[in-house]
Amino acid sequence: MNNSEKIWHALAENGVDKVVYMPCNKLNAVMRQRPDNISVWDISKESIGLGLCFGRSLAAKRSAMFMQNTGLGNLVTDLYTMQKLYQEALPIFVSWRGHYQELIEAQVIFGTKVEDLLTAIDVEYKILETAADLEGIEEDVRSCFTECKVKVYLCSPQLWETNSPDYHVFGQPKLDAVDIQVEGYNGTPSLQRAGAIAAAMDTVNPQDIVISQIGFPSRELYNYADRATNFYMLGALGSATEVAIGLALELPERHVYVIDGDGSFFFNPNQLFDLAAMCPENLTVICLDNGSWGSTGNQPTLSSKGYNLSAFVKSLGLKRTGMTGDTEVFQSMLAERLNFVHFMIEAGNKAQDCEIPYSAVEIKERFMQAVN
Image: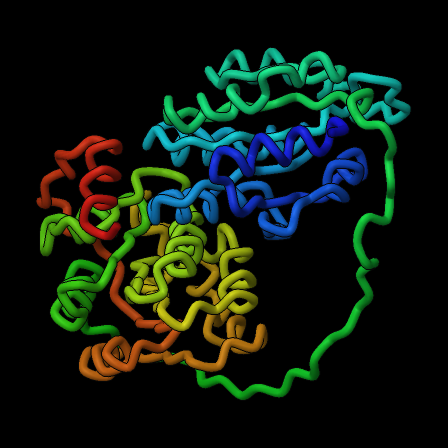
């Protein structure tokens, strides 16, 4: 086997059946060797890959990630929250730019500091420089999963026998025509978030899965209807819907609801692109829109300035959507299991609710026992 084949063999032998990939031409040689029994999710942002992989792991599936080392700088918070806080395994193969025969000055600046970064954030890493460094790679990847840890494999460009810039078909713009008409909203909401969560939980079925965004959404969900099939996000703002996409695709027999908010989608609109592109039929994203950053003091978001998230998702081609400020209509949309339900609520938090008493690992283990 060549060096690329050794990496894929190590992943396949450890039960990895899907990888996420953020393009880098230094990884083209390894991507050319991808075996048929491992599929690839092409991602548009590194944190998207972490969310999708984390969602799959909640369904007891194994994933890996391929990316460029400069992207590690974009991942610190998400990596610490999802894979470190919840102690979920993920091998990450990173093209080590700025390390070997690098001609781009900007790559050198970060490349020389990547080891210091990984040490600082307590992420284990292994340098893959030559074929000799791949000795025992299968056992090394196995340790990621048996020890429930993240490990970064810094892959020097020296490792690859060839570098092929065109391992896949080139992209080409091909845009669908968009002609939509979306109503605005200028009403007076009747519920705050806690009331909207109660209305939602009174509608969903007991066997349905519910994933809640960080902060008050998770806290208020716990206090109203704690159950093993709830998964509480404790960090990584803007990732809950990505986690739900990864989970829903792996558990097609279960319906998954996400309690999310307008701030999350303005912070990371990539979630809505992925919702439209992948669109699991068994996924309902609930956007509770109070025009505010609810967990940080109710400062205004862009929806307070007229930016319409329903129009955005419809422009992406998502058809099964609904927008309302009426509680009964909201519940009927949930019962209909639309893919995106945009519910207008009043700003405000139920501050007297107690904090979630479970650790992140306890939340994960309880949830996985309930759904797998």
